[in-house]
Length: 310
Image (tube, rainbow, N blue to C red; front, side, top):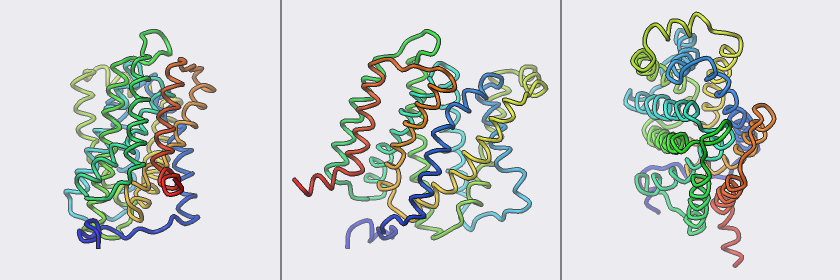
């Protein structure tokens, strides 16, 4: 019996066709997600967009959705890590010059942060190919970071660093889910997402008042247009409630190191959407770095098969 099993981790199982369908749905929703964020940030500040997103994802459902049978510490920890941490940093990074296409690439480094945290804290086993994939992807990130600029449609260094921090917070929330699964067993993901989405509302709104000022916040709310409303509803209902419920279910059923690499297809959708909708054109070095990151993710996911053949 290995260490993970001894500590109560769920036994490994093959991904079913339903699991794969859920993963593909998440890829499409989250791949388009970055363009929608950019649209919302054209009229809303990062902290106010976070406030409205999580209000729409939680408050209308509290009367109909019972609190999940989990200790409050998991609900609060997930809400702070995934809500305030991940999206606070990501929205701020997008506002400070991170392009939507590159954000879709950099955010997927959560797979490698998740791997490191899962090995360290959950004692999940990592194959040699997974470490090799991490090294290749890290090299790609260094190439992407070196290609930052300050012009229109250029990725800024500040935006890159904030987005990398957001990816780490996503990985942290993945670990919260795995710990919660050990305590709460097969809890329902949807109530978990709804109730944890209440946690970042007050911190986001407090930050909006502090950073933007009450007058600016009131003006943004009064001038809420159709584009901003679409962004809020897309991010709340699809990207938060639906996609994160599916993602949480996958993390409940399978080891974190197996689920997280499926995000390698999200940058493909994200880059195409950013090019078609926003007119972004990554620099040659950014394309090279993106290729290295995706190659690292492929090695992470499938390298063990090549390793055995060798």
